[in-house]
Amino acid sequence: MAVLQSKSQSVGVKIDKGTILIGEQLQYDLQVILPAPGYGINFRIPDTIPHFEVIENKNFDSSNNGKYFIVHKKIIFTSFDSGAWHIPSFEVLVEKPNSSQKFMTDSLLVNVGYSPADSTGELRDIKPIMEVTVEDYFWYYVAAAVLGALIIGLLLYWYIRKRKSKPKPLFQSSLSAYEEAMQALQKLPAYNEQDGMIVKNYYSELSDIFRRYYSRKLSRDMMNKTTGDILLYLKDHVDNGELVSTAAAALRSADAVKFARFIPAQGEAQQSLSQVKQVIDLIEKQTKANQ
Image (cartoon, rainbow, N blue to C red; front, side):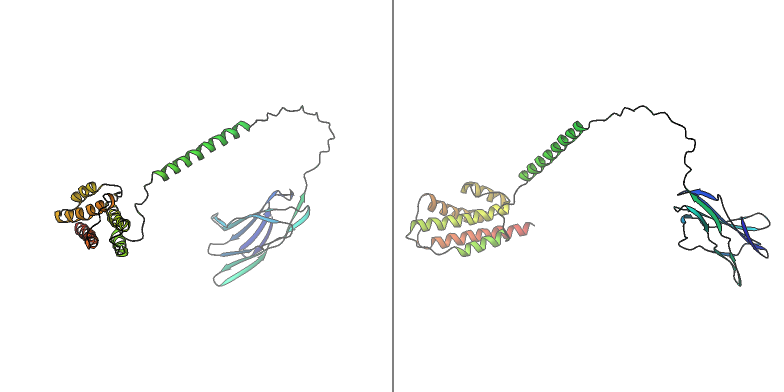
């Protein structure tokens, strides 16, 4: 152990072994003896040291033996270069608020070598061949693949079934039921009252406009319901006998034209359109009042 002294202060370094194998660890100990606590220790070790690598740089620890205050630090080195190398001298600065003292540690020689070769020259018995059990994992892979396929199949089945069971929106439209019905009524053209086919198409469209509107309001398909069924739903849906009567007149006129080939008198088509519009307006008004 190399020791440097100044008055009542001393700095010493030592290593736990002077010879190591390549890659073996070496402990480097720094010890500073002070007359009292309150000193600052600045141990200036460089980032790189030729032929050595720092494995661990521990913090300072301190103790008091009753007479002196001892500060201790450990550094773990290793080396991967064979040869005789010196851990160089390092600067140690011992400081107090109004003074400081610089010390230089001594360099320490370390021999780094390979493990010694076997010099006995003895012949050694050849060991018998050991049997190695090779496990065949083929069926494990097959079972895993089948299980994975079953899981994927079940997930696909569940997804498709859920997708099919999900109800589709009734009569998709970017417009509300009321806005859509009003636009459709405005687009109904005037017709030649003497042409039976044109009259039939007109009343058929008029009936479909109301049925589509009412289907959307009820969230139920009313397109293929009879006029009687629609009137029963309407009677339960709205509390207005006049409204039901108005709807009945318009829908029955449409049925008469479509199925009995009835040709209405002049002006009745416009009256039927007004009746359908009136029924829709009343349903819309009552729906908003009940919300």
